[in-house]
Image (tube, rainbow, N blue to C red; front, side):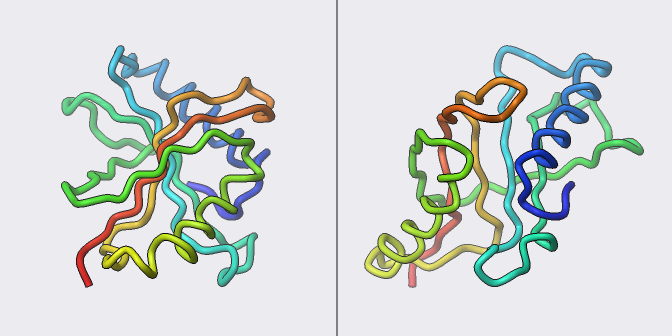
Length: 140
């Protein structure tokens, strides 16, 4: 969990999660890395925006002092594949909400948007990401 959408802070959060995951041997071939952006930086001051870094874990792993467990409910999502730098991700969200959503016949669902990371840059965080943006939706 993180306050602010600062790339260095996000990278630090991922490093802490990675250390925990390695220590608990939770990585599998099918492990999925995802991020949940809880706030819109166009509305919420950037330093107050909240971001959750997450990975899928085996069901026998329980929450502890370092990490929590969050179930993503089964839901209908519009999925947008994006390949871009970290500083371009917000622009893709803006385009989805301003250009696609109004004419889609859909409205946002009851769960936050999330990103499934297919390829991430090295530890510095600069370089291209390949990700799927999941926007939970329901009919208008």
